[in-house]
Each structure stands twice: as C-alpha cells, then as structure tokens.
Image (cartoon, rainbow, N blue to C red; front, side, top):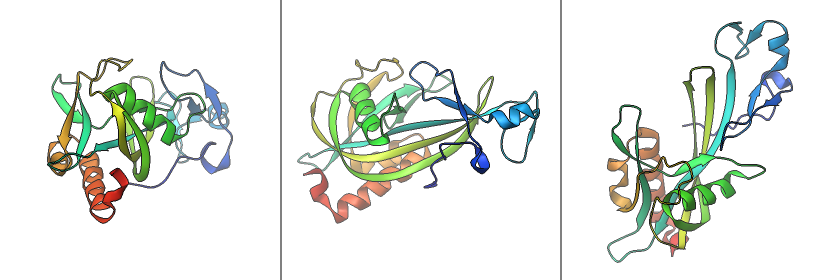
Length: 201
C-alpha cells in the first residue's frame, strides 16, 4: 500500500495532455515529450511499439452501518476474468471534476444502494496492470463512510459489474474479501472503529 498520489503532469514535471476518456473512466494521460522522441512509458524509457503508460484514479471504500450484533459493511459480488464470483469493496473511476471523496460516495451508492457520508480516510492502493493497448498505473482512494440510508442492492450499478450487494459483519470482512490489499483496508477500518466507534454512530 502506498500513500503516493500520481502527479497531475507527466514524470519529471513534464506536461501531459488528455486523450479520449473511456466510458465511465478517468482521463488517460500520455507524455507527449516522450512520444515526440520515439519513446513512451516511465522515465527509464520504453521502446516505441510497446505499451504506453497511462494513469487512472478511482475511489471507493467501506460504508458501515450499526447493528445489534456489531457493525456491518456493504460489499459487492462480481465475477473475475475466470468467471468466479469475488467479494470486493465498491469503487470506480472519478467522473468530471469529482474529488476522490465525492466519487467514493457516488460509487458506493450506485453499486450497493447505500447512501453514505465520508467519516475518515482509510488508505490508498497503488498498482500496475496491462491491457491490450496500454500499461496502467492505477491509484484507488479508500474511505470509511457511515451509512445514512438506502436499501442494499446492486440493481443501480450503471456498468452492471456488481452481480449482488450484501451486508457483511465488519469483523469477518478481512477473511472474506478477495484481494489482500482490500483485506488490509478492512483490518484498518476495524482498528479505526475500535479507537473511535463514534465515527459510525
């Protein structure tokens, strides 16, 4: 886990120019200075013809509701590339001029049906992956939210990626989430609420 957030420009302070935005996506950025010299990618230089490097920013997190048996968190179930259902935290790309916190509230509402208010930051996940035509540096901002209303459902997900949404005991979440980084975020949320339970009360 890293707290680094991508700079608005290219590496070494060079400017970047926006290229077409994918549906529901965050603007992708490619350094024109390296394109002009026949190289793309990180500062070390990637030969032309290989995948260009782009940045994506997303946000999401844990929306927590009080319950007699202990706090519960809203999660989604979606299929991975192998077709297996995975339990994940709701999240998605920033839209327009949204801040990460605003995007987290919207994405959680869309994917789980739950309206939440941001109570604390949880952390930032920073990772790389490759697509068919690009190598992506992705940064995901995660927040702790208090459930304020709504009904748990994945029917409002505009992308249709969430097959189901459900409440899960927060204490069980580190063992249920599919990805280690999200498991650690759930453990962090437990620690935060152990020290400051009033955040979701």
